[in-house]
Length: 71
Image (cartoon, rainbow, N blue to C red):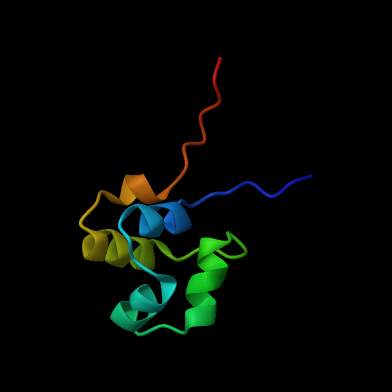
């Protein structure tokens, strides 16, 4: 079973021309942690998602893939 990409962090960073290193510095997190979030290996906490959305000036919903399936 393939792992579902729950968050869109990697895509949003790319859209904004930002790097995971930039985000790691802004959040005072390890780059490895950010990398694991970007690859959906692990998920950031809601607190971190809100902080990321604030930094990127987007709605927190834009960081999460929809769970709805097309009918």
